[in-house]
Image 1 (cartoon, rainbow, N blue to C red):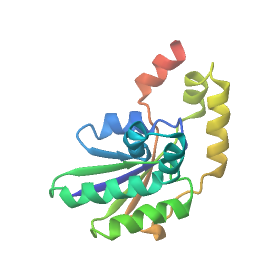
Image 2: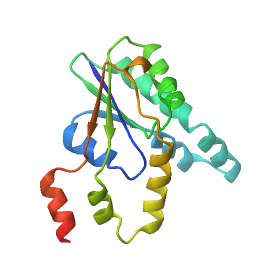
Image 3: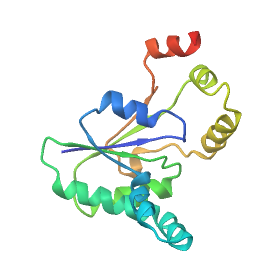
Image 4: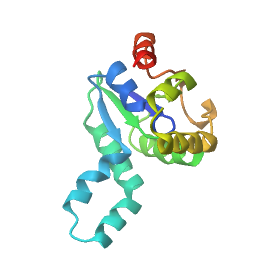
Length: 163
């Protein structure tokens, strides 16, 4: 079994990276709670579900681990901007397995972001805000490996700059 946390600010390319590098992996995201929102019957219930998003995600993560086979790959896609958030999910994994946890930090280049978000000023502001709040992970947190990656391959960068 392989467990990989893919982290980084919103709009950094986490989903794209996962689709490209881990196409056959089981993926758990913070958006796991969306299925519960569609079943909600009131705004109050929706607010309660949103407040518990982290717990739904943790529960889904643990349930997936319990059903994994030895050659399966599980990816947790989540911003995990701060150490405290990462500890929450590392502890959740440790409650059900001692499998090593890899960490991949998605860091887009400024050129890629400029091209991708050139007409989306609000999204760029959001990305910059989150990037400023990001606490870089450390092996002492419980990861066996931490890699920093660019979400888009060079050929995609050229396409973005030409469009």
